Amino acid sequence: NAGVTQTPKFQVLKTGQSMTLQCAQDMNHEYMSWYRQDPGMGLRLIHYSVGAGITDQGEVPNGYNVSRSTTEDFPLRLLSAAPSQTSVYFCASSYSLAGISYEQYFGPGTRLTVT
Amino acid sequence: GDSVTQMEGPVTLSEEAFLTINCTYTATGYPSLFWYVQYPGEGLQLLLKATKADDKGSNKGFEATYRKETTSFHLEKGSVQVSDSAVYFCALLYPTDTGRRALTFGSGTRLQVQP
Image 1 (cartoon, rainbow over the protein chains, first blue to last red):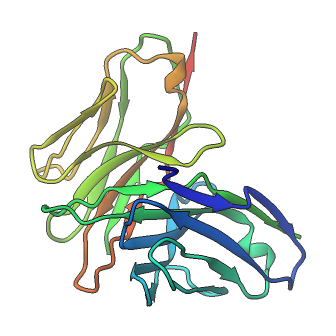
Image 2 (cartoon, one colour; image 1 turned 180 degrees about the vertical axis):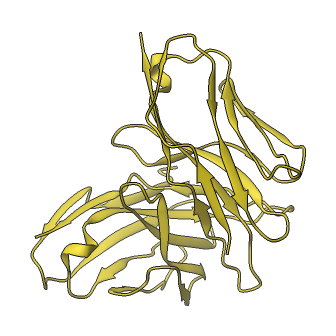
């Protein structure tokens, strides 16, 4: 299993450009999410999905769109890039356990710089 | 809302020293608690977890005990190695009725172990 994969690893955009960060998982996890990591702030949730066709907003959704057409893929779209979106983006997936803990598996991240 | 507070880093230790990284949380109900580790240039990896009060999570010589009375989940290791140098994140998960399983992260603690 490849686990959670993300592409690209690095990206530089100019202000106003759009792009899509790709995320895929091969573990048949129903839950997927996007986080951004900024210095000194831990990770913050952007959007999440509880299954194909179902998405919802997290803490910091503005400027980002998502869709979930398959269980495996959960792309994150930046509509009009801004310097405030310079960050490292992580995709994660998880599965349900009998108890109340949900282990989340993270991709290697995409480092995005907006100039 | 839920929150996680970690001791600020960096924490610099000599090889074979004892490690403690403090983590306290505020949450309603009974969240699951996690420690994640991020090695340079990589994504987050689950280090250990605990799902209920007095549970002890352990992995690779690291331990943490879920203390409900002090709302803490401190990470400890008896003898650190240079290879333990990384950023450590404490996190909690409190699933909601909507199915949201977002991790709430602390800001991370950088550990540097010197030979």
